[in-house]
Amino acid sequence: MGEARGRKSIFITGAASGIGAETARHFAGKGWFVGLYDIDERGLKDVAAEIGEDNCHQARLDVTKREDWASATAAFAEATDGQMNVLFNNAGIGRHGWIEDIPPEESDLVIDINVKGVINGVYAALPYLKQTDGARIVNTASTAGIAAAPQLAVYSASKFAVRALTEALDAEFQEFDIRVTSLMPWFIDTPILDMGKTEGANEKMSDQLKENDAEVYPVSLAAERAWDAAHGKDTHYMAGKMAEKTRFAARWMPKSLLKRIKRETPPRS
Image: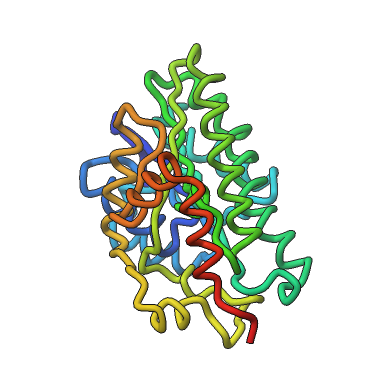
């Protein structure tokens, strides 16, 4: 395990793959000390080996468990002299399908990880953020937090919640000199696109995206926008031209956007 040695530091959940792993590479490449946290310990080891053991701290973290958060943030703070420049609340999952086909337990899990996991992170990291000048929380939301997506109903609800939490805490924490921002990607080429109704389902969202020729953006774009979210003046940071277009439509043409969503919702087979 490395030590920050005066470098800026970022604590990343969901760091074993996808946006989390790529963001770790991006920040490490710019000289930051990186905390890598996930339930996928093998993936964490691979990312740590890639960016260098001296440049990171890694540990298993289940974001739904407050005790995991307590131990992970405390160990991270030991390596950074109590500092945490950025908390990147990135861990998340999704389930794809008609809501009556998705087991309620799977929907519970989406809420537990995507919403409660983010809230748990805020509580656990706040003491360290408060004692770091100009600290920031970056929450991974989604374009589905701007315009709800059919067959992603609970996932969309979770990302609307993350968006609301971001905006409220950005106001609440201003007196602590802590900004709270969100990353709002369109479809990004990561393992989450393989979501189905349940873990390991044969029918996956990625199959439908291919059938519809949907735009999918490289994970490097999301990492670059995560960097922007950790440094810029805005509250929400879109990743992908389709994300920008959706935000524009939601703001200026909300009725037309809702009509289009209904029109483009496929029939049940």
